[in-house]
Every structure is written in structure tokens, then in C-alpha cells.
Length: 109
Image 1: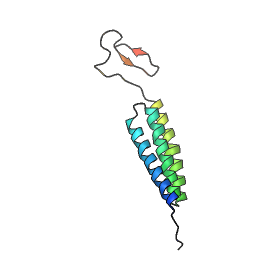
Image 2: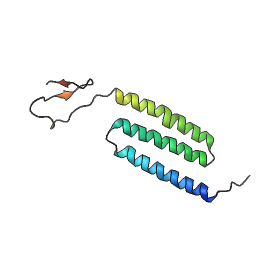
Image 3: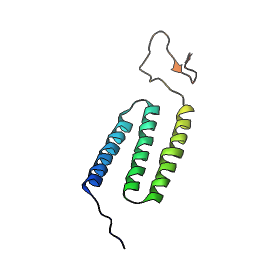
Image 4: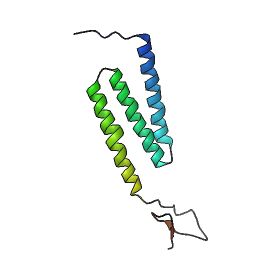
């Protein structure tokens, strides 16, 4: 078994990558726009795959990049594209009252 020497630059890189993962994760939680949250989540997966690569696990890094950043991002974007935005009951009382449709128009009650 060979020992892998870890230098100070490697440690700094790992910690910076870890901080970037935490920041991207918090952004994914805080974004109100769903598409922005999906992109932040995909960036978390890509950063995580880089972390696995730095930990000398290229097979796990490749799987994380393909599934986490690739397939899941596509699935989430398709799911958001097929959803309809609804207004809350308390909003928009008075003129133009109704709920939003997929095309962005207002459907009268």
C-alpha cells in the first residue's frame, strides 16, 4: 500500500472547496426562483465531484457528476417546466382576481 502525501496546498484547496460547497448549498436553499435553486444544486454536485476527485476516488466523482449534476438537473428542470404557478388565496383581491395559468394569463373564477 502506498502512502499519499498531502501538502499544505492540497489542504487549502480541500477546505476552499468545502467552503464553496457549503455556500452553494445555502444558496440552493435560499433562492426563491426554482431554476436558480436547481443550478445551485447542480453546482453543489459538481463541487462535490471535485472533492471526491481530490480524495482519489475518481469512480465516485464520475458517478456524482453524471447523476447528481447531469441527470438530476435535467429531471428537476423538466419537473419545474411542467408545473403551474398558483397565487395564494389572500393575494390579488379586487380587480383581476383569479389564479395564474401555465401561459401566464389569468383564469377568472
